[in-house]
Length: 204
Image (cartoon, rainbow, N blue to C red; front, side):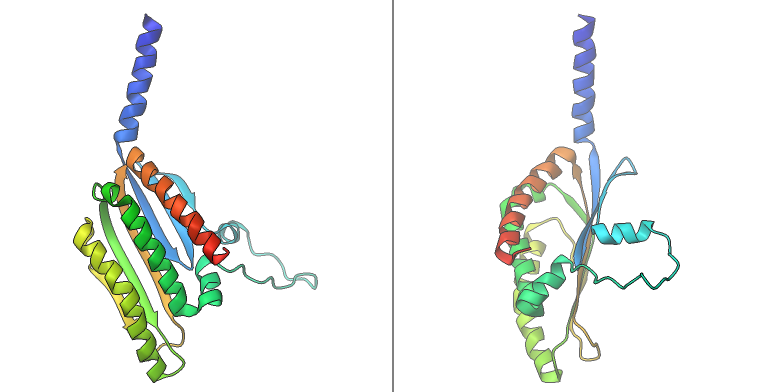
C-alpha cells in the first residue's frame, strides 16, 4: 500500500512539473537557435554545431599546417543559394504559415513575448531594391497580418525596409514563448512533420 502511495506521489509530481510553465527563447538568423528555461534554469540549448564548438575552443597558435576552413552554410544561406533572397524569404514564410495553421489551436494558449523581426531588402541597384522590397512585402505581410489577428502576439518590433543604404540583404526573427511542457511537445511534434517536408523540398 505504501508503494502505491509513493508511485502515486511520483506520478502526481511529474504531472505537476509538466503543467508548470516553460519559457522557450527562439531565434532564427541564418540558422536556428533554441533555449528552453524551466524555473529560471536553462534545461536545453540548441544552436549550430560549428558555432557551438567555436565558442568552446580556445585560440590556437598559427602554423603552416593551419589552413582556413570554409564555413558551413546555415539553413538560410542554403535557401538563398538555391532560391535567391526573395525565394528564401518565400520558403521561410510559407513554412511558418503552414506550421501556424497546423498548430493554431495550441498557439492560442501560448504567451508570446519580445517578438522581433528585422528584414532589410537590398537589390542590385535602387530600382531593383524597390522591386524586390515590394515583392518581399507581398510575401511577409499576409503572414504577419494573420499572426496579428489570430494569435496572442503583439507585433511591435517589426522592421521590413528597403536597404537603399545597405550592401547586403538581412533577415532575422526572434521571440519568447511561454507554455507548459505538454503544449510545447504537441507543437514541436506537429512542427517537425512540416519541417521534414520543408527540408526534403529544399534539399537541406
